[in-house]
Image 1: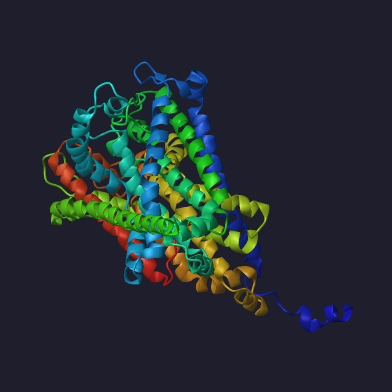
Image 2 (image 1 turned 30 degrees about the horizontal axis):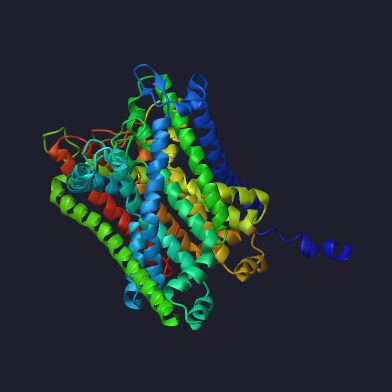
Length: 320
Length: 282
């Protein structure tokens, strides 16, 4: 052994070119990965520090008060928080059945010729910038909705019923419900694409064995495919919810931007993201800025929980 | 009895099939409607001035030149930053970190950043760069915010395609006696090149339509400016401002801008699909 090491031919062998930079590269890669970790930590820390004055001044009242008044410097965030949750959940309720239908259609019923074009179209549409959806909502959908849905509905509902409560509001189309519809359209292609991908992971034999037993398509989807992807499907839905919660521009255009607690589906409201987008640059004072950053922290916490849950359910192998 | 059940089953199945067809038709109709309005309104606002003049005061003629140039500068700068960090971080996850606890943590954080609300990224960059380090709104802050949104996408795709590379490829580098980093650069990155490029294009598509992170970072600039330390106009912000204004000519420009943005995003997405034969998603 020692003879080999002492062999002059071996000791003369120079290390490969560039070997000295090996650890440098390794540390550069490590630093880049750490930067990711640091930036998420940074977001939390920055939002916590920036929002601290508001949390300290208003305490728990920040979450329970509905008074948002920059003039008197009273900031209660219940309106935007409720608006965020209501609009996102409503969007999910509207969007999920359709997205599920599209996904099943593409996997089970679609003629082979159309499968690829529709699939690609759905995926491309998931990438359309949200500001386009927002503009469409503001200029096309809101006027249409006010004229042809909201007004007739408001005059048709019986007085004093719960429906009257649900539909009251200014008939201009800018309200929580229309914002939810726009959100639903926005997250639809995304959820359809993820659900389709999940349904395609169901092994062919499993589905064929279902059909072999004489099951109908409905029974195969409900009793074979869905149970197979159940966990991941819930994860995919949570991802959609996460998108709806944090969506800013599309909502800001159409929700009406009032800070009151929404009294009905057709009442104008606001979400956390739309409030920040609208007011941050025009914030009147340090406390106003701080309250908006505190709102940001609340939004971060909500989406973090939803996204973390989604990731845990999706597992690491289904990367959507 | 049995035939009744069979009838019920087949009726339920027909109803379900019909529902799926209708759902798809509704979805496609809704999205087609949006694209149709965008095309109709956008093409009406397009003319040569849009590309040769800067944003006007209400009532006077003008275009979107400063916003288009601003968007390009912001996105390119952001992509330079994001590719640098994203590719290295993805390489670390796939080649060095692998399944260590630290790598798992980074992976988790990356997944969260991937879908975190972009308005919060804007707030974060505002708080750090605009409020404290630089002291005013600037194009650099806007680029950093966009980069923060692009990095997770690139990291994810880089890691995924590197993991797809066969072990024999790594061993071939070792067999030649190359240092690890040379093998990664010259063998792995090369063979994973189209995949990494796809990630970059998807990230580019994503950030070129982003509005919220730019609101509090690069702000807006009514005039033509290429200074990185000054506020800079960008298409999404101009669209946002003009669309909500009361002036018809501003709204027309906003539609034209939306059409340009959407076209750029779609083009990048389609290019990403062409680059890799097998479609990959972020």
